[in-house]
Length: 44
Image (cartoon, rainbow, N blue to C red; front, side, top):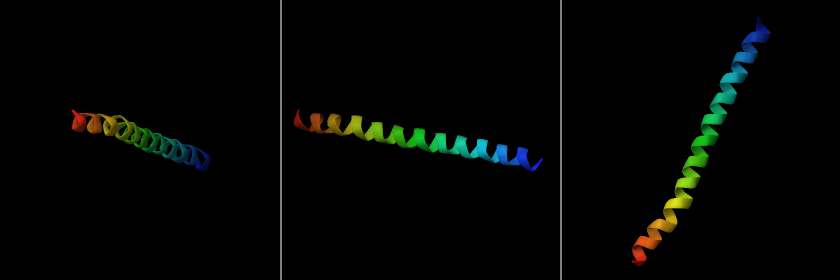
């Protein structure tokens, strides 16, 4: 029983890490994509 609970906790932990990682990569890509666009719009 203890073994199963640790497996469940690991699954939740991994899911949380995946969510955090994907959110961070989303923010990073947003910054990388939007910064050049904003500077380009200011030029024109």
